[in-house]
Length: 437
Ligand code: MEV
Image 1 (tube, rainbow, N blue to C red):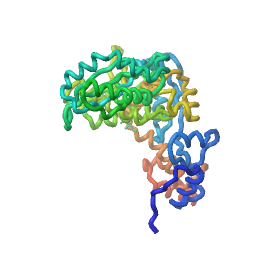
Image 2 (image 1 turned 30 degrees about the vertical axis):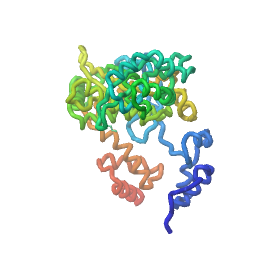
Image 3 (image 1 turned 90 degrees about the vertical axis):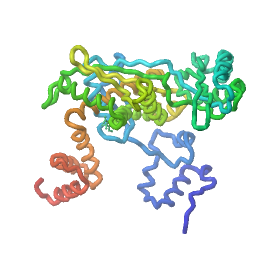
Image 4 (image 1 turned 180 degrees about the vertical axis):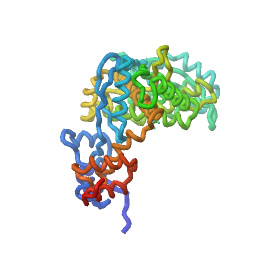
């Protein structure tokens, strides 16, 4: 019998009814269906209001990165991520940075860009000036849409008009620059853009279509820098200064080669995204913003460069490694999931951040820490050894090792450098037969 995925009224059912339906549909066992259960302390009704057709939760491990000192303040960093080694790497990097005085971080004002696209404008250059002639009135009209934001010092602060040549003709694109204060800004910006679009269209003499925030948040940046003392970087086979040079070589490849740069920036986002997720912020917005910022800045620096690392490394006069990062940080503490999700709220409390800007500073510091840790590992012993033990542990559990057997299976997998499912099974069988390891 064919089944239909068209489920009229599915959204009206209770969480339990939806879950029972999906269980039946997929033939899930009781245990599999139970993995969707809400943990104690998480109110199903809260999560049911957050998205549609909720059937349960998908928990991610939440770890705490240690050793972080940012602008002189010690912070514990909650990180939600599925990938092994990320939390440990961030903690280790923060320890080295601590020896060099910790992370110093800063942010720009939390200004987001809203875009309004106006088409069919006969005289785009003059239209630009007609809109700019009315700037003060247009900003006032935008601000009338969100008096609360204005009361807290935010609101529409400026506007820019761009002329964009596209495959479908020349377009006038207005950028409304809105200080979102402690919010992500999505709602405030979109509301203002939708409200102002008819007036922009009238002034331009065209028709307005798209009215939406831009994730390329070039005005809402977080920055951090730290010194990683060469003396702390020595390994059994390389001196500290040699490691500094190896890291600079690794960084140079990311600058010169987009294929390496993509991975370099991915490692940065391992840190940033896991804090963004832990605080209930929109990680897709941050990811999109970070990667497009890396490309946008590359174009600004040199038209032939397609993407640049979000971090920079230099050697200071003492021969120590100095790392810095600059990245868009459009995160909020109010108005989104951060304010309603119980775990996100707890995580914000653990972080101890009181403003979206402070959260941005944390993100920048964690991104830099994560990137330094990756470069250090890659430039010395490689990342596999660190990964291997955690990977082996997962593998031991997945072949059915009991808690009292896991350590012995892991030890042999790592010792033989063969972290494979078939080997884990063989080792477990041997252990159970009492064969010598
Ligand atoms: C893995 O998730 C991240 C790294 O590949 C980052 C990098 O190569 O810089 C280790």
